[in-house]
Length: 120
Image 1 (cartoon, rainbow, N blue to C red):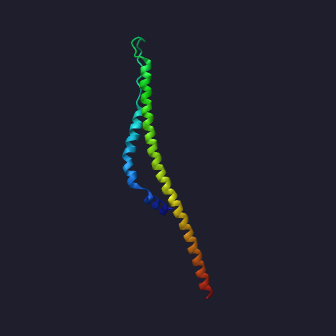
Image 2: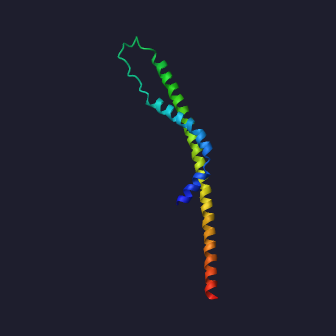
Image 3: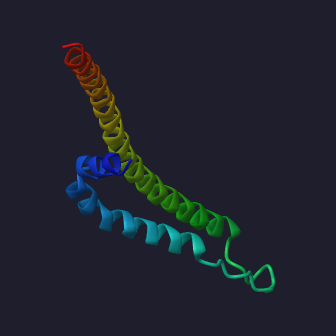
């Protein structure tokens, strides 16, 4: 089982993963900090002194749209990396199937040679 993991680690394009890592980490930090910001509680002021509520709602909607875009970029980047891992695992699956077939052929050949040597 350790051989499969070693082969998997060799197949992964680590250069691309390492090049993308800072962008992903930065996006994750930005997304985390944006979602953790506390909205200040509205102060109990008279209605006439408050700003236009529709402007506050528009500003909040724009902020939410920005957060959604940042999330989408991060998710897309993670999806691309996930696709690379899936391709690497699929290549490993094919290699392990070929290796299993080769081992079966060699086992059959060894058994045949052993039977032939015993009969001589």
